[in-house]
Length: 520
Image (cartoon, rainbow, N blue to C red; front, side, top):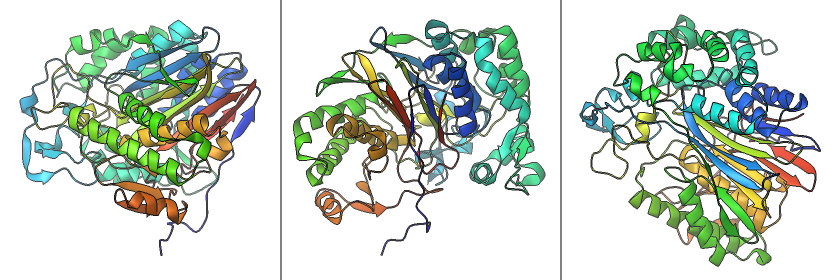
């Protein structure tokens, strides 16, 4: 008999409103975004305020030391745009600095099981850091589509940084995970996250301790006053270079960073258009699976055995293609450290935003000058030379992020995205199919069991699925039944918003203790 890790079944209500809603992985950040909506801001304003704020309350997932991708769906113009602000390797990077170590693959607590690099320098410390793009991406999008000033949008983050990060049981758990993989190796990280050499523990569940994240508050204040360009060409840029002096970073890496915004045409699918990120993201893998089920899935037959088999087959083929031609073929840990948020406003504009440090606590390296916890984007690259995704100077690595927006006659009707490494695509793919192929609302979508087919090891199946469905998939590939649960999540962690007529709804990942959907 398969036993669930808990003896309870967690639930989380879908939020419905005629106004705007923010769904995010932390309730304090979602509340900050909802407050922006209440004050008259649009979905873009709320998304940027939320994204900046969330780096102060779940800094192991994202922050201004990371990067990502965003889709913006505009109800008025009936257009969807992509903002690309992923990390880029330093221009002076020497791939020879990352020789393979004698001793096999990286430890199990590292995100990707690549061949191990000497001193783990592609994972831990300054040499694991790629150029952060979050500040450029957020500011570019806000300037083009928002109504707030940069100074206004960053205020919630400043307030949270000054208050300090809460250390309830969930935060303590995340720090404990991160500490095992290197937080204690770096002075500022250890001082902040491991006081007395151990993860901080609140003595009261009702009033958690709060810890100040080094000089992050001062850096955010400086960003508010000097503007986002200061991160790349001003005083903050100088401080970043000081923090990363033991790496290949040079001033030009920051000075020349660009976060482009491009229009997304989308894929015609059953009378709607599915808009996905392009380039070195998981969007092309999602698109490949989508093109397959256009031919193999019959929505009129309902969501039964045939549909789950069609999903599994499409994902299996899409990932086989990804691994062969796009690189990034190693297994990934289910608790990848990314944050995703979705916003819909009362006018029907939607944002689907993913930001990441890559691994939990990124490089585990926190700058003493800036308080920035830096990404370990170097680990996205395959350390073996001669591969499609091998380490290379000045290049973007292949990533798993896949924010998604669905439009009907050009108007956004559904948006989703997730954290969870390579498991992001199967989650977004199935949620989108549930919405478009089977007409499900978010209440139905979030109560429907899913599969994960995202690698070379077959499928993971929610044990709540009917035995006949699991058996049918097992006839085609190995299947491991499992439970989605708090603390151990074998599937990705999706947030989603939906608009039906003039009514909005939003849902946050159920199994994440801090996640929430908050209405204006």
